[in-house]
Length: 341
Image 1 (tube, helix red, strand yellow):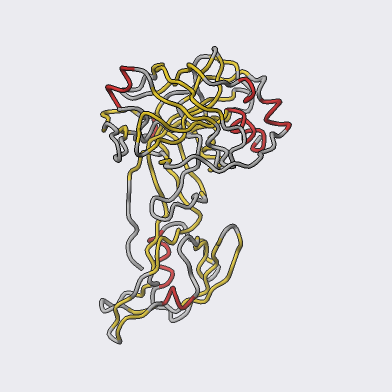
Image 2 (cartoon, rainbow, N blue to C red; image 1 turned 30 degrees about the vertical axis):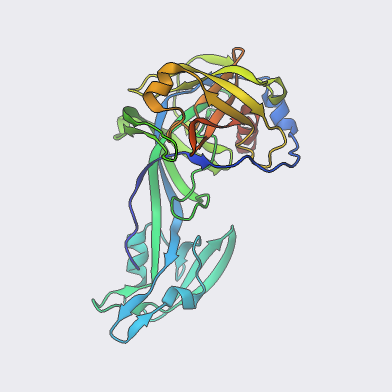
């Protein structure tokens, strides 16, 4: 086994094409949620997410005294698998996984593949250094910057990002074991340009900034049980109340205080098969364009406000035009809260 890659990210998804079309049904829960009042987000947060066991990023060869061997490939492992147990021992980190295969000619792995549990037999290969290796690159955690969309005082659940946290190498939605959110401060911005995604750079650390634990990582966002959250109350709009025209996003691109910036909603896509792509938006605010070039990584989850109501959140940026991107309808995020409650 080779060491995991440690990476500090700003969470965002790049968009390069308009979504295909197909009908999405609106649940009764989502329709009911549209009459809610929530606490407006906009604050930057740091998110730490730890996967179930270790996440397989890719398979690799092991150089032994007898030549190259492929233990993981022979065992039937695939990129994207989660190794949750070795010989019935629950795996909590990549270091723990390495310890569990040492000095063993065969181990039994419990893996998750697309939420299906499987059992695989692995024969670790002894490298030239004498260390037993599985022949895989793995990751057990990720961390990055995102934005809070709303806090629901009734359920004490906060929604953020507007899309799920995916693995940076495989592009697959991560299956978390646990995670936390922390208050973050934005220190600088790398401006977005045509063909180059920008990003906000921030710091978060220490238990004094702890906000709450991760409840769920889904296609519509990440959801947390916050210990506390203060802000401005705002009514929620149903998706059929959202229209093309002037709107605003509420985002933190410096320090810790969010600000309002003008945008245009240029297209409504109520039939998109992608729940996080319900509207096309374009940044028009001169100040934000000067600071960031438009939408940049880390702004995912920034609330979209129209006619005094929360209508959605920023989710994607077009890599070939950072002034434009996608947004999710707030109904889709609140429907997920109803499932969690």
